[in-house]
Image (tube, rainbow, N blue to C red; front, top):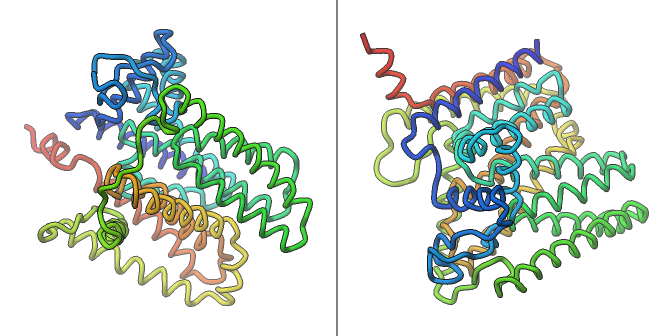
Length: 399
């Protein structure tokens, strides 16, 4: 039954994304998406990663050729591979890639908790997440990598310290970086873990993590050094700006965006009065949180059980390190304002951690079972409400 629900949920999420993409006039692409697909097209045509300088970032001439360095090469390479294997054009290959990585996420959650994998996977119905996987953006692939990284760190903590685990940890850390430069946050996580195990006198584990950290730093240094040799900037373009928002403005931007992530079903951007549907979704969300909280209070030895959930702890630590690095970088580099796109890895990890705290609890009361089912129903409703409602209503009303 659990596997059947998980499969049905995956089919529903894929169908929702394909419908959204088909209806949206832009196909859920942005200028960044064009940059990714241009790099994938260049690779397909045998030009390596030399592409048209779309924004005039390097040459000042959009018709000139420049090496693809403003973003890492991982995501366009995956788009090219998906196109080559499926024979789809690059646009649909990028959408297929998103669906594949959603599937990988579902399989990982099934491995983590087979009985309630459908509850864990239901978080893909949240606004920020379904939006992210609709776009041709690298965040969808990056989110999966972050979850794998947190899972491997929790696995090592729980005593499964085989050589394979550390090799996989190195591989996924490098993968995260070549998908998005901010994946360098894993260096901080590994450094903290190395010191933590050393202080606990678990020197064998500490030394293995230190080796992973050193190899990862060499790899990152070599990648950024090659960029500097090709372009003159480690990450492809000049990132440091002197004319920036004040610390107060950046803090306000961050707080406002984080507050917006609380609206799980329908995003409110804190501009103007919320519409009726926004109020309705808030009215739905608050009772759900209250019922889940009451179910948790009925659970005996709750704090003790929560403390044992190292996977959720690992996800939260990864989310916080990512957020801290994001805000730090935004304080001196004027990239996009902190918004739901940039916050989506943080939101996904926090949502997964919160839901996993609940589903991992032993079922000592019927209230807790109902709470788990309620979480699933809540995110399914969110998925449905994030469909193109006007289009569907128009189809239903057609004679």
